[in-house]
Length: 242
Image (cartoon, rainbow, N blue to C red; front, side, top):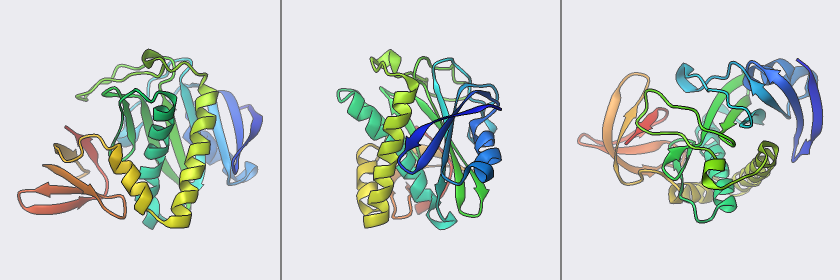
């Protein structure tokens, strides 16, 4: 794998490859020789994967990248929310008239359709690989879901994938600084303003079961509060469906 150094973005050193199997795997391999603050993007990603083993379909011109982030396991749910919020804020800034929402915990929807996929994996101790795929040029066909995918281009946002990468990482850096300085309260409020299905009846599928209830709130840890017939439940991780 040949990596070409591009530039420094905030605290990260950005490298790009012509082709990788997975940018997450590439970062895991290179984090020790290149340092703990790196970004690896790829023009082609031949074996990308999503959460719960779902495949991420490659479309030339879309953005595939992974960067490292230090966070304790205890605060990871909050970081997960910040990742989605930062991306949603970038898209809203680029297209203020568009309907941009976050599906808990961090999927970003544009005009009711999914435009990104995010996969977070542990590298070592408190260092995490944050892998993001953004539909810049085109949208894949989604199977096994009740929603469709869209791209930035389909919605009139015509920027190069590397421009989106820069915008996103600078916004994420700002939001992380806000979180480190002032805690999660303001981040949580911003997130809820952009939340998809907030105060609506939803279905949440966890590793063990499926639950239905009202999306009541987001707590101070980034957990979803689901109001069911049995009372309020905190959902740490899961897939949310309408």
